Image 1 (cartoon, helix red, strand yellow):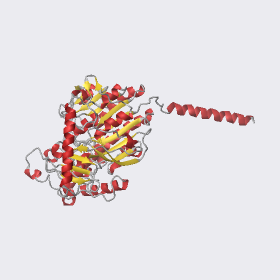
Image 2 (tube, rainbow, N blue to C red; image 1 turned 90 degrees about the vertical axis):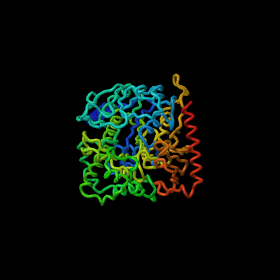
Image 3 (cartoon, one colour; image 1 turned 120 degrees about the vertical axis):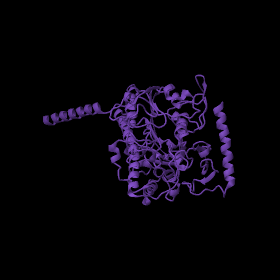
Image 4 (tube, rainbow, N blue to C red; image 1 turned 30 degrees about the vertical axis):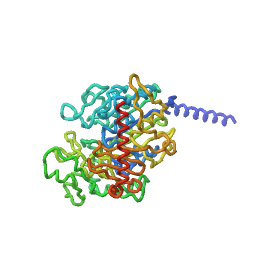
Length: 527
């Protein structure tokens, strides 16, 4: 009996001691009630360029986000860098002097604001929306810039730390050589400690700039993909389409847009090389290329894949941080891209190959078209290849894991969604600024498992020359200022059959609706 009693004491001590050890290493749960927000924006990454949307590029961390969150199969951007970012932060299609960056409103509601990454605004954006005037910490750059510290004295578009110009070597970075995607994460993680340790809600924007040209990547990341793209862009498009169908992101009867849309006749080379220019608007079947061309193009796409891979690695660092701090459940994580893949074909104007710090190469139009599978055309176009993006949101406390929704959203909807999610009231006035009302609509009904009343319209496309305007299943779109095209996206999601000539009444109806809405938006911006 005495032995049994001793055994019981020993077992109790072991259990209690193990519990103490477990509690010592278990992440402490935060008492904070408002959700944190991490908003990650890829750059020039096409609809099918990430694993959860059919890509062969390895993105295990984006895979994880999709498995633990919700994917939108139909989500629109503004088809180019600066309009997408401007709509993202203001909730506006068209803004003016009274535009409000929604992170300013979050800050007034107690949020710690961090902006680490690209910042590119439309001309209508007033200076008070810039990160330097809002964020507690910011590291920004405009438009494209090198990823490696360049051999020149400074970047094409330099970095700004809290609004002040800094040289690359003076920016905090943990790994050499300096690589922009890693550096943006280094600084974000360092800055997150302050609000997390103080149990203060935070908003983090990570605008990686990957995989916008120049095509530059670490050699070890390029090596993962070298040789894998010798199958060619035709095969890649076919395989991605099948995976998208298998995932249920597109319907089984979706037709792959024809390869003849593999063109870029509106953006040529900087130099007057007639023989090169002549090839730009032409589609070339992969099998007709010689071995040297195939090898060069395999390298080009391998570098692009490496840039996406590196971005995903860094997203993994952020997700691990949330797990280690015990705050993942109460953190909204969003990933999307600012537009479709980019075809600004200047590949042959530089002696350096893609990948290296000395190079400033871009992705070929045919590879960009593969990135936008199953759609046609590219960045800046209002066609689906430019305007239709992937979208993933994870919020374990509120959003059921593993969902796919086919309801339509738009980048202009993100600001009202996050304001509602954080129970942050949109003010009629901030200081002397009479706030311009939001033009987007909250996605919360969808995130909560319901059906959202679809907005009256969606709009995208770079300027009126490439504009698209959509109401329900009907869409009009221009191709570089040409006549309006008409598509029924419910029956023809890849825009193969232009119905403008057989249904001019519908074109006229939509053009009138577009013009009316444009006048309304411009009037609001001018108030």
